[in-house]
Image 1 (tube, rainbow over the protein chains, first blue to last red):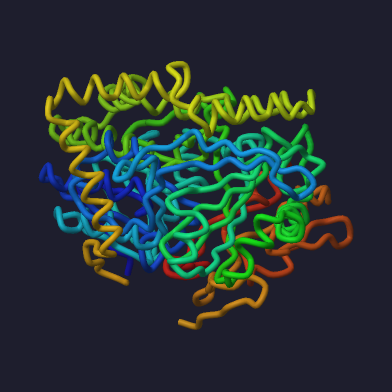
Image 2: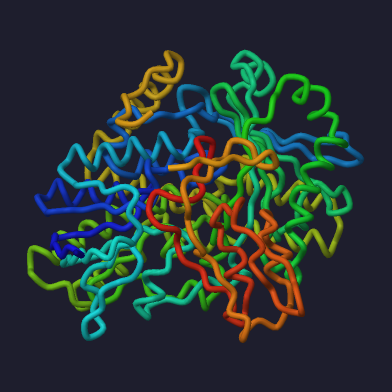
Length: 454
Length: 90
């Protein structure tokens, strides 16, 4: 017989955002349940993942103060410009001295498990192997979900952290499925590589391989992620992607994506000479990501809250249009949603009148709006028209080079976030330095917090 | 639960029986083959000018097929909890 139960806050999804929201709600004393459809948090999450530093410095305290399982600090971005399989120029101007880091690479499963462990530790209840099939709707208000076992879980506030393909907000009549123009299909390859080889070949760098379309090693510029190699502790993670709509048409991505990577492996000397002899393929995966959700008005303007529901992370379209990662925005929006959910439960009112505060907080956040409306990747389409390699190099310098920190790009949200952090806590920079130093030491010693499931 | 692997896509497992979590509404399908073009797992085939789910054996639940179907002919849902695609290397 189907069960009916109630809680204060129901979080759907234990990816990167859900556990953060759940921990905050549980810390505030709310009865909080997280539903996760996989058996172990993160094992259905696919991402070539380097989480940028601003997610850590301006995100949840408990992540900054904890010892999550990072794979490698990334201190330098190396941009390789390729023609005829050879590198004709390199831009590695975006760098910071260790122990500072531009970001940290990570595997999704251990990192999401670590986050879910922190939510459970705070008192949230995690239910894995449970799919939320449809929302419970009463007079247009979301009152909970029905699970795949037919159970009803009713709540005062639902936090929807179901990721890109999430259907709950669509079923609730709030949102529509993303337009294919907003979505990139990306493919990833995980290669084992001895740590000393990763250290020697890449150090604390990640690499991009930029080229004009005739090189055949990636999507047309501005229509996808150029081929990248993210570096992990004892592995590397090449990846690339292309939007589901390219120049107005749906391309044959089933053929193109593997072909780009095959061309890269066969043509590019850097791979053939320096990397291929030292690696062994371990995994091939892919997923879809709403990278241009914030750039396309129909998608950007879809609601992120409704009666009884708050939508966070990829489910809300908070994906970085230029950098392509969604983790910092998932963390930021999770904290904002939790603040609003706690207030709604305290007031006994989860109507849109109260929950709209979430949208206001999202708009005022130094990073979220900037992250989803950054045109730098889209604008690479200009080079498709000009075919000008110098223009490509100039644009990449402003994207993945030192120009990224210009005030008109990352500089503005960074300055605003620093100001806000200092207003809240004048000692914040000391805490950031402590975090960078500890994270680096953790990495050197390969010692992180234990996980509930390995 | 049974765990399957694939030679084509190493490092990935498919757990248990996820059932028909993706279906095609033939009445709506116009045979445009967009789903075929974006499916890296080769789940689809076109037969009698209609898309048909051939197999979901290597589906990674990305839903690209659902997004590119502007006729609304692809019906996408999540597999039951604990079943379907999983990986340690995502």
